[in-house]
Length: 319
Image (tube, rainbow, N blue to C red; front, side, top):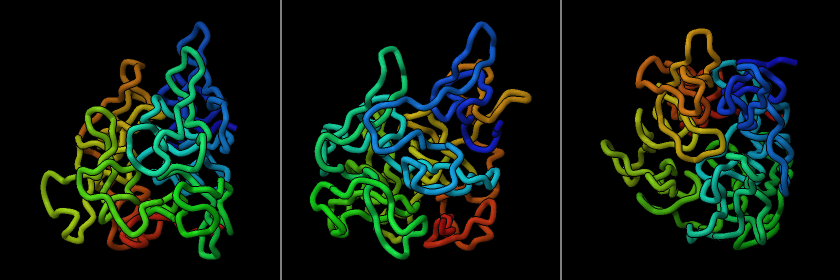
């Protein structure tokens, strides 16, 4: 079934003109200008093809364990987790993955980005050891909005089993948190916004290393207001960006920019004027409502009738 425009990326088997349009990061073309989106990369993972943007019917179909509406269409898709890329999701380098070496966080060095020879995009492979900070995990609670439990490994670094180390982040993704009652202050290395004081965005520096965001203007994270990233600033997911813009980034990467894609005439939103991998971005003409995960005051602020819960546009439908 053709589902062009159902998500922020093109589904497996549908028509594409370049790989950046595909949820899998791979547009297979013959001699012509058009091709079809291939299946996501395979490899050692506890997630089977449920990469970000894939149309879904239940949370456990997704690598992020979060199936929620794509704000532009209302169609349920696998939502990206903030910060580092989780087990089975797409990546471009080791540093994109939760558990990459050098972070100093629990599980440091347990995960690499596994790619086939000659491919730009691979997957964050299974951890070599315990589940690192920020990775998806086994969450079981009667209030879990997606199901009675998430189908993921039950061994977060720092503690195993139902010990409270596996927690839902602000978007509803069950993630390992071995930091206890502490939080990472502005500028510190993080795995996701869940690590940061006051849930500040966890965004990349120029080298791709994730840090808790320091707003260039406005209140600090200690002032009780959750900051957002303005147009032109760094992001890993749209939830990092202030309302009116979205996170534009290469498939699998954690290095994005808050802005708005300007597609060519008649083009898919993932298309680019030159057919290349870097979309054209501007600072205007963005959505007038808050996209999934962005900040809100009431439900009227959110796109597609998504509820406003805890100051964020997040979904609460139980599958």
